[in-house]
Length: 193
Image (cartoon, one colour):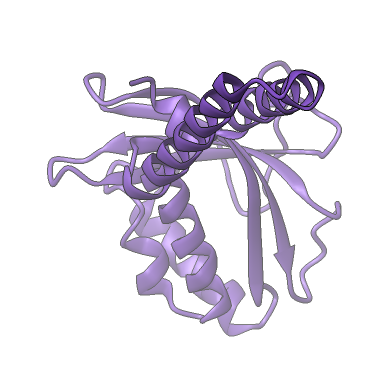
């Protein structure tokens, strides 16, 4: 089964919904009982796809969960909750994981950053065999820092670490109007290349 069906079943739900409307209209006109069987089959398919989307935890869903947990770590001022999802191979310009941590802790301690929202996830390339995934999402910072924009587009690279956990390896921020696939990323003030 393709993972997109359980990652985001909205297209399947739309097709099933349109099919159900068509069958309902036909049944209304003809009162043919066989059409009710078709409606029952569509309802069963709808339920099966919904159930699978809730039960199957794909790589894309795992990565989205890691990002949500990191955002919660910012809100909770808990660096451990953030850095447990960052790979030891993390790179942001010339900064590694150990160099990035004090910057994050200082921003949280000074209340420059008090929260973070992440939404609108789109997995662009997820390869368990290649142990790498690229995801694009929107991110909004909260706090006293001058963020410059209401929100950012973010492109993040995750790697599958030896313990079989997806962790953040790198990220780049883009203005809201710039497509990460084709635009120039922003320079962060604390990052030196």
